[in-house]
Length: 307
Image 1 (cartoon, rainbow, N blue to C red):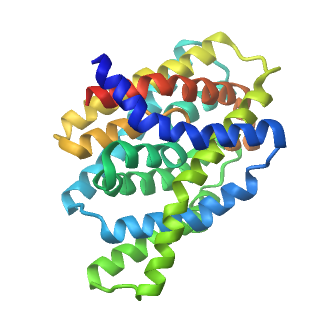
Image 2 (cartoon, rainbow, N blue to C red):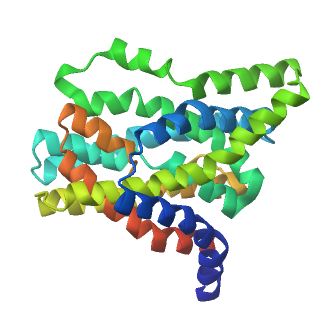
């Protein structure tokens, strides 16, 4: 077990740590802003990765179906559990919203995709792409609702999904697969170049965002009940729920491992953006993002080694 853990650290997390550390150093000493880099990742590189992966993905219709089923069930169960925990702990309404954001949404894009690629190879990335697309859609609909609550606009949330290039990239990739259409060689090479740039840039952004969250949270006051409930829900209850649902849906093999690891990711960095915009306990969300991310460097290697 220990040798497997150390092997995972060396082969998976050491390569990941280099761009993360680079991003952290850039933020700490050069004050780099991640907004432009995040826009580049979200609107250019991520769609290229999604398109290339889905177009060539070795994934069956049954795997797509069970992945969609898992994502929907997982969201409903975690939402219910976070609401129950918030009520039992007597958290305020804003803390309940923050707890829900921390519990349900994981950093499956900036952190999850590069990790899956290194841990499970292209086959793992193929299967992860469907999960990530669904998570992006849920984040931009349910995520807005959970953060906004009283001043939520369902129409606005639905419209926001159609501003995401990754959704169109996924639809285009499916169309190309159905019609057996192939991009001209020159365009395919260009898409591949953009796709290859996604993982390192995403990890640089992650490192910079971690430092930004830490700096923003140094003077923040967060209730212990809120913080520890967020940590427990994301790093313990989330993976256990995922494991149970995967067993119920009879998902096995590489797809099982990929979905379980993506479900055990730390809290999504984008959650704090929603929390700040709609005042959904941003202090709580920020601290949970920082500490779940740090904890993941111990928890995830152990899980990957076990799998």
